[in-house]
Length: 270
Image (cartoon, rainbow, N blue to C red; front, top):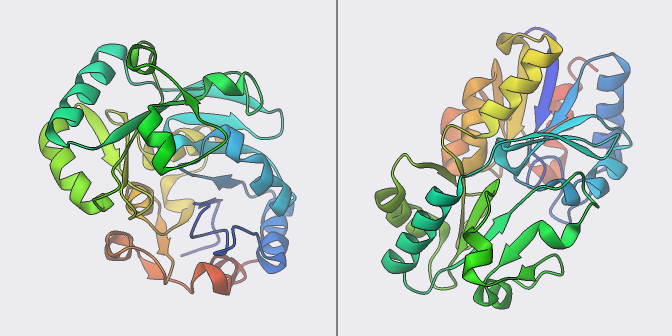
């Protein structure tokens, strides 16, 4: 492709190495991209509160697409710019049906506040069983009514005796097109956003605001939640370590995240 007008990258398994670090080579390349007045957009399943460490590692900031496309977050101002939520009726019904059809699963919800550090205790609510399987200091354990009583930007479903692909096959039959389903790990967790919300929709919105044509967007990713973005971008690049679904739709395959795969491609122009 010609020199990109916008660079978009997934975070985990793509931009970060397996130790969740940004290499000096990758950080230097990203800084050259932005110094050339070309936007670099992080597009991730992570919520805003998990972005500051990534931004610090890169040494640059800007608008990021978080929660698999549901949240636009200004990393410079630490401000949520926009969010698209799952409504309470759908949230309630889907959680009830998944508990019935997938015994042993546990659920959590992501909600947004004003920024990464604003009312953190309100952002990630989960059932006790979810916390027991996935210990995390961010989690606020809540009663079922509290979990589904307000809209959420993301629904997470975890099962400690199934992998993500197995869960997805069941959930697809249960949920249908009421929500957008994906996963970013194979280790027994699937994620839901509002219908029509994915990484492609979030990136499309940012590109439109910046006046960048779809054909001039290059995107990098590695997991099923990156498929929509890789397919939408003018040039989609999968990591060598990518899931087969991402590899299948990519225009190009680069080196692994541990071998600076993102930097290796961007160094053609920067």
